[in-house]
Length: 72
Image (cartoon, rainbow, N blue to C red; front, side, top):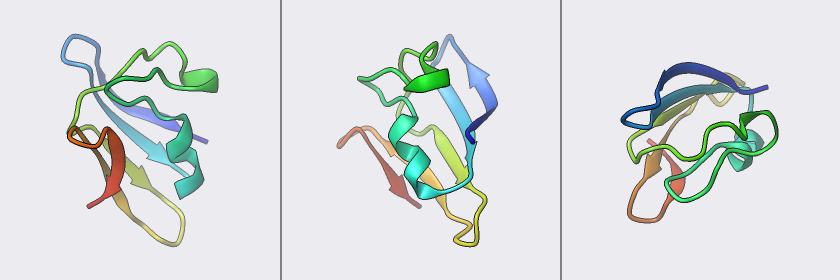
């Protein structure tokens, strides 16, 4: 399950907690809205973060050049 940790709707900066890498698919990007229960988030800025909490313990950031979530 995805949890919004931090949100700034003015700058579109968000931080998310995700359970596993597959949930990156429902997160918003700079050009697409979030999916499912995140559909109210129309987009987020590059540099937003997602913290993965499973055994991988990865940190992801939204890369503005590719508009994709990339592992840091």
